Length: 99
Image (tube, rainbow, N blue to C red; front, top):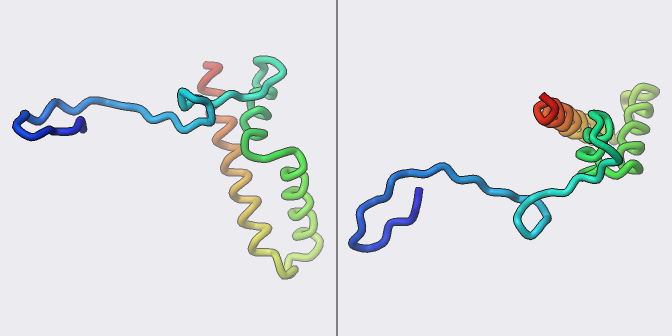
């Protein structure tokens, strides 16, 4: 809702958007080698997870398969779920862009 000032009538509601990216206008740049689906998905994933971080998350999953009772099992499961949720959203976003 727009702000109401003293003595003024309440204005009509308007739809607004907030951009929270790192660019001055609130946008986000995505590093992508080309406009292919895989490259765009990878660019979005890299905006949050480096390749090293992704590799560590996957390595933790291998450790869990080998020994599900390790002390950090809960942490490893949570990080895998967070990574997969972000990856799924990245895929859905790129698919919407390419429709």
